[in-house]
Length: 193
Image (tube, rainbow, N blue to C red; front, side):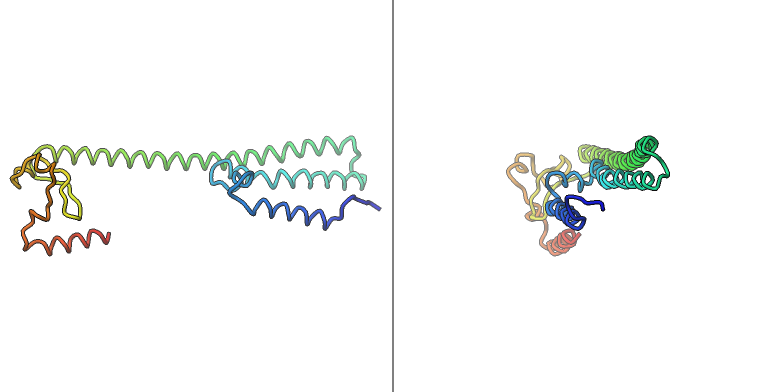
């Protein structure tokens, strides 16, 4: 009979315990790479289990084939090596394809982000040109009633200069009392969004 130094159920129990220890802290050490969302994590998840199981399965097949005299040892070992090379080559190609696809998706998202940023910059530049041209009065304030900045046309409309603006102007103080309720309603609607 075939005897080993450790019982099969004991080795399976130890393997389960080791796997449990690895999974107990997925944010640390080896498992941090395996559970990461990046390309390294994708590659580790795709290759780790096959890297353990494929040699075991192919080795078992070689042993069965040799014991049943389907192949002799001089042919079994080269077949095992060639089959492992072929299987791992396909596995690496499959993983590389997935990582490349992931990189392409990230590059597309980055291009979208850069295009959106360029659009925001262009919109801000258009707004700045409108504000600086002096055709209409524009001010920048907050919901508490403070005015932080304004263009020359706005200052001309309200009758104040830059110095008064620097010292602190409040649009609440400039708003006629009959419009205060409309301002409160508009601010509450703005804060809801």
